[in-house]
Every structure is written in structure tokens, then in C-alpha cells.
Length: 600
Ligand code: GTP
Ligand code: SPV
Ligand code: MN
Image (cartoon, rainbow, N blue to C red; front, side, top):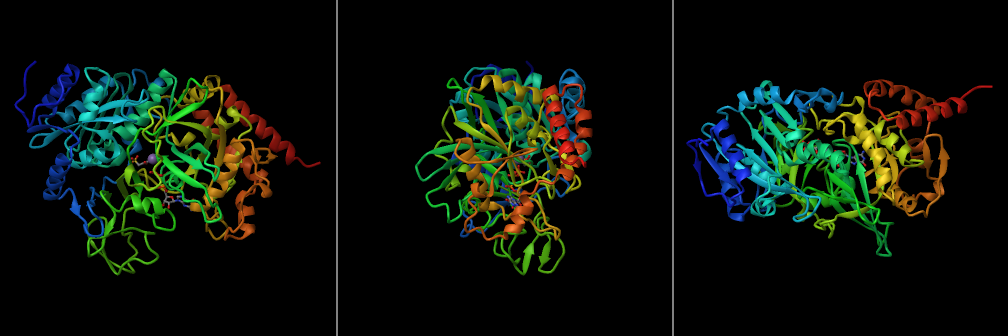
């Protein structure tokens, strides 16, 4: 092998020949001045943080108020995931499916190879070994990310279990995800996020932001993960995982899939309202969940991540006190506003904004301005160990057993607060046809209802029809099937205010879900699923008008006929691979609604 004239700052702490050869190959392509192997030590964190401050990548915040916290301002044209520049590069277009942009692996390697060529000249290439999942877990996966961004290194340090412990777990194995990332010049014209599931490889170029570049997260844990999951008999999902402890001490584990910026972090960290004496919710994960049937017939889940990359706007002590506690120290803030004394601010942090701020772009801002102070997709990166409600079982190698799965979207109309699927197949249909209004988490217009099956539309690494088939196949492999539910916290009244108070009050709905999963609570049948009888819901002390709650839970048959018709285009798109059960579920509901609304 020819060697490239780069400085290896320190000898790598591994003699894994597969890894060494691949790093060498990537260094020859990108031509960095230096190659630095990250060990995950405190000393390294200190050194890289100082470098980031010196190069204006990080701005130190007020360390009396926010010890160890920094602000990062990304390029204003690089503030969210870009779905139209994200590709699945399988051998055939059919494998990627109509839900993904596709490029052939040859074309993608050629096209991005030209962009990577010399992209790190004058820069340092960091080698980040990381583990997704508890160290030593049979469900964990190892990845190596090569990047020219210190911001990425410092974020991966929080979001994953990285450094020497990952190299140690890898040993001499060739089985690791090969992730290559360069910011290049951050030009959106030269931005691509390409996944090669058949090579367990990810190439990301031209962005420095979140899900585009923290390759363990959406790229490995979801897109590549879902592809591997189907082959290996497990599930990679865009879900939070929580443990709900009752006064008896019994804990029930639940997962929930809500699309980006639709409430996972908030729900995962929920603090039960006062009337729930003796109840406690433990966060296992807030974004990603890997599930596998266990030898006992139950479905077991791990959180592959070690931190939270959470939405800042709307976060405050009333909505999410556990998040506020989690972001008090050792947190990287991205694209939030800054106060003159080095504190952070965003829309919804306090009732009124400070008089003066520096906005997310670094420009002076005065109260009364109509401009947003923080970007709507501004984020915090905080270690999970900061969370006062962190589940004591986050590091369990086998994860936690799941009793209920919740799907939920952001719907201003039609969808009730909660319903339960009649059975597994109907539950898969509910998840598959889930709709949600678009948010700032991805580039594009906000507030448009789009079908976002299982909150996985931007993250499923293969044909979505086959993915539904995989969900249906799981029924055979899980003896103790979790019960499936659908929720909606976002229904609005005629004045466009939310009908359901949400946040901690969601606990009332969660309790019904747990009672149903444990076979304890009543329900009545509606044409679209089981719904709680009012007496089954713990609504005592809820400070919201009962009419609003009734409106939020109302099922309007005519609206539901329109909802089913709205799914047409979606069914059309996946007709080649859509399992017949999903089509049949819809037809049964459609016929039922037609008969119930027939006149005469
Ligand atoms: P990603 O990190 O993008 O995957 O988002 P997420 O699903 O974790 O969403 P998150 O919990 O960060 O919430 C996103 C936005 O929804 C925030 O602005 C919250 O304040 C708001 N939100 C969360 N839960 C509720 C709720 O119950 N009711 C209402 N009205 N808003 C909510
Ligand atoms: C999401 O968009 O679902 C996120 C943020 O969790 S990102 O990591 O940018 O994908
Ligand atoms: Mn997410």
C-alpha cells in the first residue's frame, strides 16, 4: 500500500488491519494534514474544546450559570436534515423503494469520491470509534466515523459510547460501519448523504449539521439499522423508550414513535402530574430504539444512543423539567440565541424574551422584533447521565421488555387523543398510515400533512412496503406481543389553540395505555379502534375544560372517510410491495364507516 504524507498524531490504539487499511485509504482520498485517533478521554475533550473555541466553532457560555456549556452557530443554510439530498445506494432501485432517493453504489462512490478528493487538505481527519448500544450488548453495533469537524467529534462524544472502549469492543473484527464525513465548503449544491447498506458504509459531505453528520444517529441506527434489522430479524425504530413505575413498584416499558419534532423527548422525560402520587417515569431513550424478540417470547429494546440531541424551542421548566436539568451542564447548544451575559434563550424558554439578545445567526436582537431569536430547529446535545429520570436499566445488555407500542403524529384535526388497535395487524396498519404535519426538523415547508409511516419515512433504509411486511412478520416471532396504540397531542380548536393540554398531562393517557396493556382498564369499540370510556381515564384535577377534551377525543365518521381517501396516494405509491393485510385493514374500516353513515 502506498502511504500518504499525513501526520498520525499518535499511534492508533489498535492493530485491527481492516480498520487501519480503511482509514489509510480514506486519508489518501481526502488528504488531511493530520490524522487524529480519538480515545474518548477527558484530556482529549479539553484539548478539542479549546481548539473549537480558538477556531470559533464553539462559543463559551457563562460557566457560572452553565458549567461546561458551549454554543455553536451553524451555517445559516445548514440547519436541518435535507431529505432531498439523502440517498440509499443499494444495487437496485427497487430495494431502496419509492420512499427513498436512490443512486447506484458505483455512481455514488464516483460522484462523492470526486468531492472527497482532497477535501481535507489543511484540515485534520478525526477517527471516531463508537458503539451504538450498551458496551458488550449482543444488540450493539460498532461504527467508525472519519470527520474533519471538531463539532462532530464533540457531539459524538456525548451521543455515543466512543473512544478506546469502542476499539476494544471491536477487537480484530472487520464488522464495523464505515462512516466518512467532510464538511467540504458547506455548499448545499455539494451536499450529499449516501448510505450503502450492502457495504455497511455511509458517506456524508457538505453539511455540518445534526442528523446529516452525526452518523451513528439517523444514518447508522435507523437507515442502515433498519436494513440490517430486516435481514437479521430485529427492528430499528424512530422511538423513545420509557419505563413507567407504579406505586406498587412494578415498571412497564413502553416505546413511542412520533415524527421529528413531535414530542418524543418530552414524552420520554415526562414528570407525572401531582395527582399521580407514587408514579415515576424513567427515560431509557428519547429518539431511537432497537428491538429484538427475546428467548422468553417478549420484545426487548435497547437505546443505541448515550445522549439527547433535543429540540430547544418550547423547552422550559413547565413543559420539560427533566430536559432543563439535563442541559444545565456539559451541553452543546446549536443555533439558539444568547443573552448579553452568556446565557441561552429560545422561543418558549420563559414567558417574555430578555430585552436584548444575540440571535442564532449572531446578530443583535431587540424585544419586539418579529424575527425568531433561536432557529426553530435549534438543538441541545446533552449527556443522558445528566437526566435526573435516567432509567437505571439504560446499560442493560439485553435492554428492557416492551409491553406497549405507541404511534403518534402532529394532527390539528381528525385524529383523537388516543385509541388502541384491535390487534397486531390493525396496529401495523395504524402505524403505516400515520399522518403528521411537517416541522422544522427537515428542510421544507412546515405544517403540511404527509404520511409518515411509523415516523420512519425519512429513515427507512429500504422499500417501505417490505418494511410493513417485516412488522407483520414479527407477530410470528413474539409470543407476548406488545399492544399497539395511536395518540395525538396536537388537535386544535376553531381558534387554533391546542384542545389537549399535553406535556405532563399526557401521563393520564399513558396510564390508560398501561392499564390496557396489563389488561386492567375498560374501553369501548369505535370503527377505528378501541377508545377509553370517560370513566377509564384518570382526568381528576385536570385544568382543562371537559368540552375541549371531548372535542379532542371526538371521532367524526365523515372526517375519517376523508382521512382514508387521503391515504390513496400513499397506497398507490407502495402498491408493488404493500402487504395485502394493510390494504384489507383499510377496506374493512372504509366499509364499516360507509355503513355507519349510510342514510335510510
Ligand atoms: P426530534 O428530536 O426531532 O426527533 O423531536 P421529538 O419527537 O423528540 O420532539 P420534542 O419532544 O423535542 O418536541 C418537539 C416540539 O413539540 C417542542 O417544541 C415541544 O415543546 C412540542 N411538544 C412536545 N410535546 C407536546 C405536547 O404534548 N403538546 C404540545 N402542544 N406540544 C408538545
Ligand atoms: C430528527 O429530525 O428526528 C432528529 C434530529 O432527531 S436529527 O438528528 O437532525 O435527525
Ligand atoms: Mn428524531
